[in-house]
Image (tube, rainbow, N blue to C red):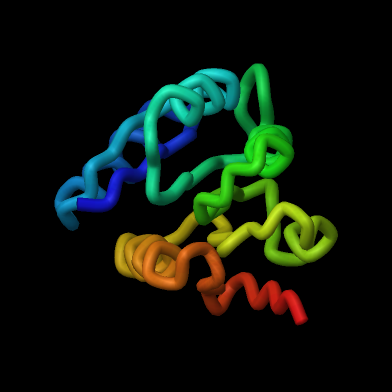
Length: 133
């Protein structure tokens, strides 16, 4: 069963996304800010990170920068209303697997997660054609 870390500071959105993932048989841990997500990543193994961008203590982008500087290669999906696919193109070195702009539907969210997991971080949703070539 794939293990996912969900970094989201809004408790309602966090519960909703966590429920969607758990209903689809994913193991989910949650972190309500970027620093807590960083701590979790340093103490546990995850197959995927799903992160918001606007969070206290450490933004999603800052978290991803730390992850890559530490040599962690897990796939990352940014689920955010403040970070667009166009924004992600400015950071190719961060190897963001997908960006899914809020609001999004349950099926779209699960498809994005599954694609990112199956491609080991190379899957890109229709919302984020981040070609690395």
